[in-house]
Image 1: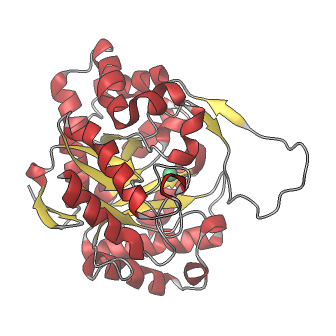
Image 2: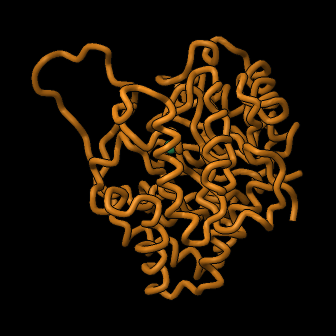
Image 3: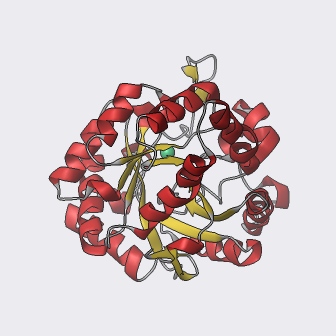
Length: 336
Ligand SMILES: [Zn+2]
């Protein structure tokens, strides 16, 4: 196996243990309220939260937080906190680097050209993210909007593809509610990215088997990465600074984890089991909508509740080992 770039340095891919490949460790609380605003509190909470993984054979968490969202600051300096969480928890942590939806993107990113954005990603992988000294080990979660790829989001995808060609690191994406997966691949492959180093994310927010197969048949991987997030609100942009007083319309939907388990079991039976990743994408801001899954179990949910659902559907222990260990390790080793 090859090497993986963790926040504390290079690690052999065979040493990762089970991997949770799409998480946001500095966003486990909806704010810094417990300690009166100290960042240290987020580190404290993350160390406690990931202990549920260590006890269940997981050795690695991938933090896919883009600049300016889900706990990562706009300049990336606080990626350094991931190194502290890794030290204190004893788990390997791999940091992603990316820019999220255009509506959330920092001004510096929106003003940059494709080649400037690619240079930034390459520097994040080689020198470190912002001033953190922490090197990125994967590009993601690189995002596109609901039903469209904005001009900025296309520039970022092209930048990620170019950065992959230069560094060999894999690209992991965010699709908004499962839309634009094929179009993401069109842009990435058109820019010369290797599909073996691409994972299309949030494919389980739609549960369309054919959509998943179409991605897999082009040589890319898919992530069933919102396990435990059954109730959803549509968050398509940042909270407005001032919302008009009174009622407002809201769209929500439900995706049962049984449906996710059915999808994984079917795809594994069809022979796609070596290109599927499993994760929870647990965040504090959304946790209130799923108190019985993420709220009750935290990071233990995948192992305690979801993996038994796979076993009930005939997915072998060997296949589960590939889903949780071999597949993410190969993605993190990249195409070097
Ligand atoms: Zn996402």
